[in-house]
Image (tube, rainbow, N blue to C red; front, side, top):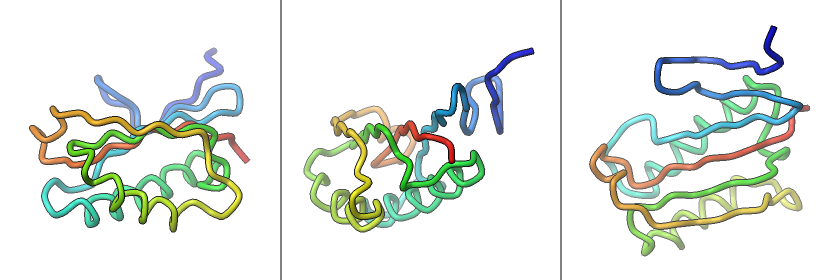
Length: 117
């Protein structure tokens, strides 16, 4: 029996995986289209719901990687991110520019690892 738990598993990905008390999750905007603020707000709401389903929360983030189609959106994404992360709980974080997300209509994607509660 595996000590890895998965939810929402498809042939290509799982909504999240949990192993040794850590949740691994990658989230994209629920719908393509819209501006960076709309996509980021929707993504953060969806990510928060996934973390809660996995037995964690945004206050338990350990690491985050933000992928932006256009690095010029950095300030707009940070404004939403900073308001979303509870004070004093900011995770280690990286932010990188990627281009191919645009092919799917996304402007942002976020990967996180979080401790379970």
